[in-house]
Image (cartoon, rainbow, N blue to C red):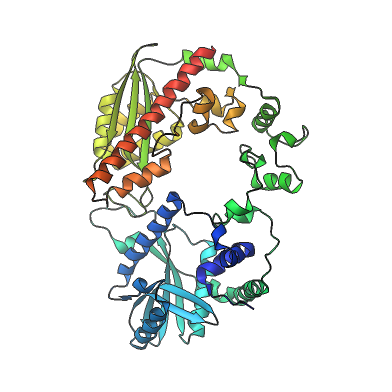
Length: 491
C-alpha cells in the first residue's frame, strides 16, 4: 500500500476536490501548465509574504531550504523554537503531514502563528489552511496562543514611505480554527484513505472546479466539454449551466425552445441554431448620427500592484500607465495616431493625464469600449489629483461607449459566441483582423508586463516589452476604428 505525504496545499486541493488530489499524487503529468497570469498571482503572494515579515523583524528565514532540503527546515525549526526566536517558514511534520508557517512568534512559553495572504479579506479557505497548521504545530509539541491571518488593507493610502503597519490587517481566527479541528481531521483521514486505496474518485465536473480556486486539472477533467458549449451562454448562472450539463446537454444547439432563458440568451441560442445575424439598423443609425467629430478612439492599459508604489495610491488600485489614441477629424478622413507609455522612474498618472488632456483637445466625442472602465480610472485620477478634476470632468462629458451596440444586442453574429468583448466582436465583424499575431494580446498580460519593467534590468528585454505593449494598445483603438467602419457599412 502506497503512502503519501500530505502538505497543506495538498490538503486544500483535496478539500476542494478529492479527485484533484488523487491526480496530483498518481498522475501529475496530467496537470495543466502554470499560466503567466497564474504565475503572476504566485509572485504577488511571495512579494506580499516577504513584506509582511517586517511586521515581526529579526526572525530567521528558512525559505531557502524549501522544497529541496525539508529535513533542514524541520531541524532548524526545532533549534530555533528551543531558542524562542521569530521564525519565517517554520516547518512542522506529523503523521506524514507537513506544513510551513509564514511567521512564528514566541510569546512566553507559547507561540503566535501568522499566515500571510495577498487578499483583502479573510476567506473560508484560509480558515481550513490555519486549522491544518494548528493541528500539525500542536501535535509537534508547541502550545499555540493564537493564530491569525495577515491580509492587505485596501483602504490604506500611501503617503511617503510604505507604512507596513497600515498596509496589513491582522485578524485572529483562533476561534474558527478550534471549531474546525474535528472536521478537519476527518477530512484529512478521508483523503489519506482515498489515496491509500489507489482508486480514482468518481467525481464529475461541477462548481467545485473553480471554487475557491481554478483547479490545475481542468484541462484533463473538462476535455469532453466543447470549446463552445452551454458553459459559454452569456450571463447564465452556474447553477443553470450545470443543470443543463447534468441533463446531458452540452451543445448550445441542443437546448430546447422552452428552456427558461433571458431574451439575450435566447438570441444567442437561436443564432447558433439558425446561423442568423441580428442587425438593428435603426439603433445603429441613431448611434452613428449622434457622433460629434472629430472622433477620438481611446483605450487605457492599467496595472494594479498589491503593494502601492506611489503616493495617493492604494493596494490593488488600477494605475493607468498607457493609452492609444486614433483620431479621425471628419467622416472618411485618414487617421492620425497618438500614444503614451510611461517610464518606470515615477508615478505614471501625472504624465499620463497631462498628455491625454493635451491630445484630446476640447471638442469631439471620445469613443471607448466599455466606458465604465475608462471613466472610473479618470475619476480616480481626479480624486487623487484634484488639480486636474475640472479638465477631467470636461473629458468625461465627451465619452461615448461603442460597446453599447453589442451589449444591447443591436448587432449580433454567431461568431461572437455570446460575448460582446472586443476580442470576440472584432474578428466576427472583420475576419482575419485580430490579436493572434501579437506577443501581448490581452489586458492582464499587458499589466503584468509593464509591472515587470520595474524590476527588469536587461535593456533588450525592456525594449521588447515596451514595443509589444505599444503594439497591443494600438490594436485596441484600431479595432474600434474597424468596428465603427463596419457599422457605417451596414446602414
